[in-house]
Amino acid sequence: MNDIVLGIETSCDDTAVALVDAQGSILSSVVASQLHVHAEFGGVYPEFAARAHISAILPAVHEAFKKAQISPNDIKAIGITRGPGLIGSLLVGLNTANGLGMGWGKPVIGINHLRGHLRSADLEQKRVKYPATILLVSGGHTLLAYMKSNAEIELLGTTCDDSVGECYDKVGRMLGLGYPGGPVVDRLAKSGVTSIPFPRPVISKGLEFSFSGLKSAVARYMDANRDALHENIAASFVQAVMEVLMKKSAMALKSYPSQSFVIVGGVAASPQLREEAVKLCQTLDVELCLPPLRWSTDNAAMIALATFDYLDLSILKKPTADLHLKINDF
Ligand code: KG4
Ligand code: ZN
Image 1 (cartoon, rainbow, N blue to C red):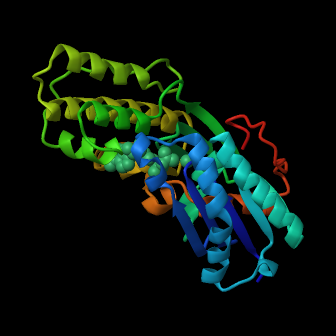
Image 2 (cartoon, rainbow, N blue to C red):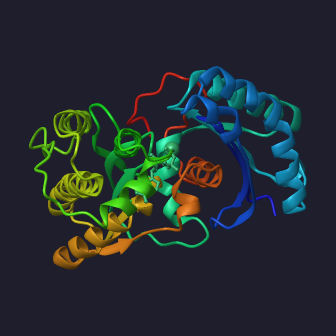
């Protein structure tokens, strides 16, 4: 044994703990959801999130060891998300991990949450063929990255404003649908026609994204056209999003030759996105890699897997567990 890492992820509203081995097999994964804490606010309330992590984190760690039927002696290290995320939530995780590491005599490694997402596709089984282009689309992030290997990650472009998921959620709210907006907007879009020419926010020739203009365009259109059919608004919005995501992904795949095109994050659940990605990969002759959604959305197993990169690859500079993190500081 001893090739096991304890991963802890508390960057937002879920307290997640997992025990993972060097092959990416998951011995246990425990998530204490805070949905009930934030439901009445219609979004995550940062101070309540931090407080809920305080009460949930140690029971989650205990449960993870119990489920895996191992003890802290059996682990090699602790991997903890050091950012980006809500500062209060991150601090609960970091301080807990440091305390446990000190008590158990185990190293504690601070992990960029985004490296976790980028590595998540190799959980349970190795799926990614390098070099790979990765599209991360979630409620918190929208970015394209190029990975020559798990040691060499290049950030190609991120969003200048809103993430795709956020944009879906806001449009969902405007259409009077529940939270999260993604699945319901996609479903409604299927019964509409793409009759409204919403802008395609292709802000530059580069690989950056911008979605706030599209969100405002939907709001303005709804103000000016109060009788417009909601399904047509949803269909036209989804079409605009897909066009932008596929255009930028195609640009990345053409400039950075890839064996795999990987899509992770909550928005990867979108059937429309999956359909478009299949077409794009057929055209470009690239293998599409859509890992199971439970590992695509926030979890601690991806943090544990990313920790092995630092334990195994001496070429990687060991990250410090501080919070001064640049987005591309992988
Ligand atoms: O990765 P995730 O579960 O959480 C984080 O943001 O970290 O992503 C949640 C986002 C939400 O914005 C949600 O609306 C979106 O993923 N989402 C979808 C779909 N299912 C979830 N967006 C589009 N289509 C979907 N089917
Ligand atoms: Zn995330």
